[in-house]
Image (cartoon, rainbow, N blue to C red; front, top):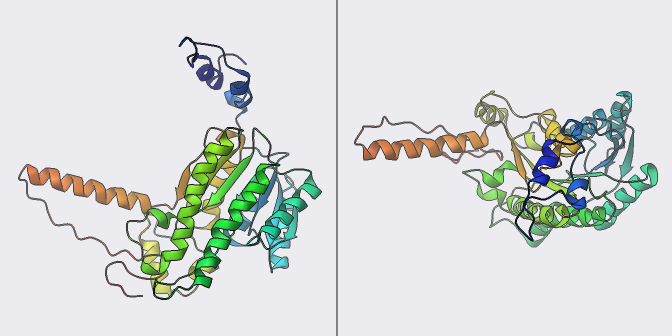
Length: 333
């Protein structure tokens, strides 16, 4: 369809040999929708593999992708009943199919087995969502080699090599790889016991950024989703209700995030509508970045007013309680 947005920008791109406007090349055409109106969030006919998807955020992602029409491979390690519930929920929607596959994706063998089962059942893999991970809590004086290795084996090595294995079978163009990090990697305040967890998630963000360049040349997009505090059993573990309430109050909506707040962005990134979204780290946290920007803006305004010799009223900084249950101002847990 002539005159569409996608083809317009291809058409007006200067020709490298004579710096004149030229017609779109074959490669440019194949990476674009035939029409801007065909860029859709439907995943009908697609096959998605979601690691760690028997509960919490992973389960919500699997259901969301199924609701968009995808056939979903639900991954679990121990809780077969929970995985079966997710499978039945997807099938009951009547839009996409689903199977449950037991595989320990913290190992390279487990990740390969999960992909093999997806191809065996559905014939292909279009979307890989690397949701599974571990979040330990130890300071520098407390960590040992085993603790460090577990974080980097599960959070970095396993998803990297699973992405490598998937890259050879994902469609080109049209394949999707979605990594998971944490909004804590960009938080203005972090606590000492987040050392290994954040180091591993920082590595994932850089891996995603590089792979977006590498695989993007083949039409495979690679993005990262970085949730903020989400109300899951893992997040609640070890935190008294008072701490959870304090974290919730920091959000403009006065609540914690829910798994269903995270899933829709994954559904979008997996779709054709996100074909021009690549190499991005999307922080789904409801407030964290807003707070940081507010303080930056406040500091800038203060400096300007100070230079103009205008008295600035003192603004008391609110106490911020971070996700491991410690307070950035008082240090109490």
